[in-house]
Length: 204
Image (tube, rainbow, N blue to C red; front, side):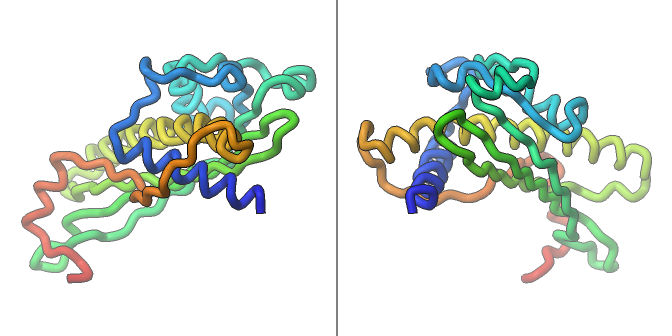
């Protein structure tokens, strides 16, 4: 029950800060227990791990090497990887695809010594205009878009890390309860969405 309540409070804190334009970089007081952290990933040099590591550092969090001694003293952020999905969002009148919807889901968990393991989850959506006339350019643009989505997802993960500390305080009764504010997964918009007006949206 305590774990369920903690997850609920974490979700409330994350969605509330996301909805009000909260940004972690430069204007957030990082809790002392989160100022140093281990970043663990099955692909430590992959694009997701690099994006998360950069966001942690921009947020004032020191990333240290993994070791048995460090794991006893500082939190460990484990990335379980990313899952990317692409579906057709709209079509032209001739039936060809006009726009895709890209969905990136990232799962992970944070282990706080002496307190427990807390699940992390974030989803980012992005509309992408199909440029089938130039496949090489389309592939390059899509990779840039995925990197933007990783950056946005990394920002959300950092907010969830801070929410772990806030949730613990609320569970322990050391902070004022806040109302539940429901929100939506992050959606990245771009000028490409305007081009899709020539297409026919699916599902309508």
